Length: 319
Ligand SMILES: NC(=[NH2+])NCCC[C@H](N)C(=O)O
Image (cartoon, rainbow, N blue to C red; front, side, top):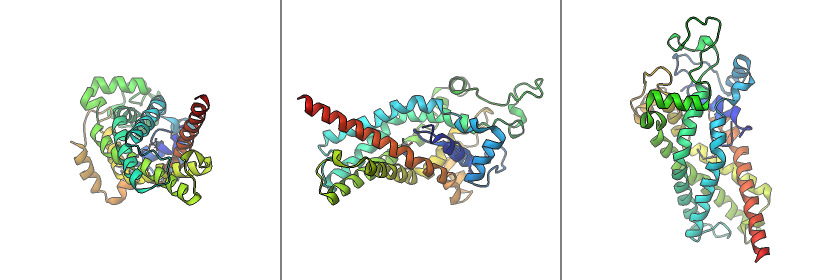
């Protein structure tokens, strides 16, 4: 999580258009939403965004908005892996055999269902994270209308939200429950249902291929090194497949922040307006996203695999 957050902040802000275990890095967030505040692009690319944030806002700015996803992360991963794993048992297609074709379809479907279930949590935690990542801690980057305390000159009281709880409260008070807290829920579904299908589908495909290649019979026999590669690939393919929707989601979820005036009338309208900037806008921040996705998901999958393996060992010894 902490490993990935700076990448995520750069993602949200890098041109055209947003690091932790959970979802997006600071660089990712900044890149996806760059120019939305004043029409001017701030960042020339992923590395420029990263160093610009460190230079002007300090290294701490890279970890903005990390608390909300950190809180949600453990719950989210147990939910996602729990739903997927149990559905696979229901389908009797557990990834413990080398047969690729029948089981793979079920892994994809179970992933889609798991992705859908977790949107209830991820939509809101990401909304809060995105808005914290988007706000810049420099006076000259914030429009005058957002300066709350005109008299406190010299004081840089320019931030819309002071932290995740303050953000949650203000979003609820100013924008309401469905239109505020629930902002971007359907766009999140559109991203996460296929994203988690590809997430588990890719991982299972690689594991089954490896079992066949090595002539092994159970996923517990695979090496932790291979699990890392398969998990990293799962995260990578998942992010590539859902990235344009993620850009739309980031832009849509930060829209109206602080000012109360909205640029987009709906998620579809956000897509339409973004496409006027050219197709490249839909890939803004992809590089920091992928820098984060591989290691974060390698660690996620190997952790789950080791826990499951030890638990199966313990259970079979006990009985
Ligand atoms: N595009 C997605 N949300 N894909 C699912 C990946 C989830 C994973 N926890 C990650 O943050 O990378």
